Amino acid sequence: MNRVLVRGLCLMGIALLFGLNSFRYQLGDLSRAGPGLFPLIVSCLLFLIGAITVASTRFMAFEHLNYSVRNIGIILLSFVGFALISQFVNMLAAIVFLAFFSTLAGTSYSLKRNLKIAIGLVIVAFAFRDLLGLNLPLY
Image 1 (cartoon, rainbow, N blue to C red):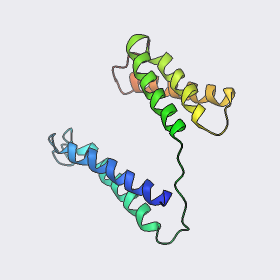
Image 2 (image 1 turned 90 degrees about the vertical axis):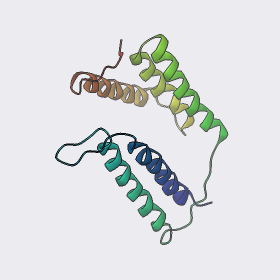
Image 3 (image 1 turned 120 degrees about the vertical axis):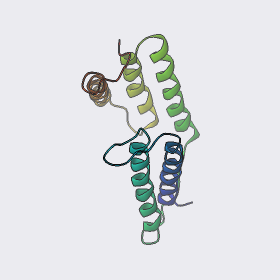
Image 4 (image 1 turned 90 degrees about the horizontal axis):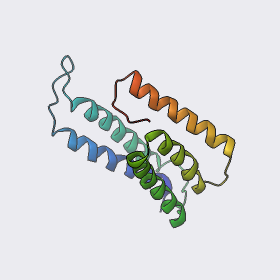
């Protein structure tokens, strides 16, 4: 199976999932946007990117789809760990756990790189909380 084709189809599927769910909310118009307009616009753009990716497979070399059940399990466990640590400890510890544990699925493991990623994600979380006003239980 072609890896690029699967990537494009997955993007299109995710876009359809969120785009169709955005119709549950009021869309409004561009001058007075409702809560469903932003997810609809983003999902339309994501669908377009997916469609371009699928169309580009006609002109690209075939890339075999390789996957590892171990890596899929590591990523799923990192998401579950993030949710549990966020619920029972705090979100900062969960972000650090996610940054360090999920990279076990990669080809190389670097403590320095993982620390940089964790610090960057913590900064983004504080920006979301302080600049956008999101209610994130960081600590």
